[in-house]
Image (cartoon, rainbow, N blue to C red):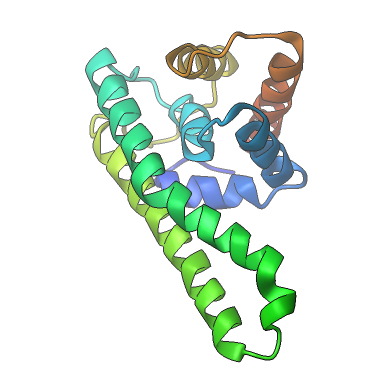
Length: 172
């Protein structure tokens, strides 16, 4: 995948659709409460020569934490609850329509978060950039540290699989 003029949102959609990436990201989300958008941001930003400044990083983390807690997580919880209740409401088509609308709102909220994050790093210039594994690992370590998660063998192995998927896609 070429990084030339690839927005964070486009990058995320391309990567998320790769074999195993969605499942891996969701496992990291479910097991460690990691924000999938921040995981993907760590990998997207590893394509740029310019480093994410500490100020931008803090702004991204602060916004993302609040956005997830106040907007994304309530939508996700409602959607998951409705999924378990669908059998009781299977004759009511409005129930499924509402669940689908909540899913679309959750996706729109995630897109808004990614656009906010991208706006925090306006100095990024996506002209023929190359993925740097060391930079991705550094950003992922910063994310874990910010979330108070210790880098243990299991999470390290899962993050390595994510980095490898990004690295492999960057060679295409």
